[in-house]
Image (tube, rainbow, N blue to C red; front, side, top):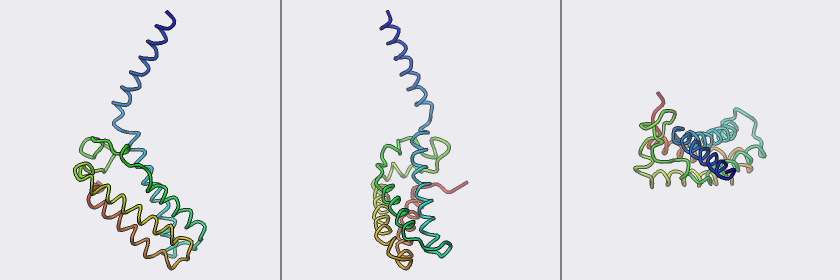
Length: 154
């Protein structure tokens, strides 16, 4: 009897957890992908402020930020972009359906970001003069993806 009750409680818990996830509207996936973009923005800001002369160049801080960008670029993207988590299907995202309709392009743009992040990583501790060109390169990868796969802000 005890086993039957334990099994029933476990099944109810599993069912409730599944229902919560289904009603959740992909919030975990959206939080994960939005979180990675916040991490990218913070670290691009650190390096960008140095490149623009807004803050003093610090080789260690630039290298740390660049290393973080490379780490983010290696995150597997598939699980964070489930079909139906676009701006036409749910609130709280600017992801356009082109991410799924033109997935090869989306993946290529993410790969371009990774390549640019590696370029920043190579240049980061080498001095201020090397940051400008690689900042332009990584900024271009962000813009290319946003222009195609991100809805404008309301």
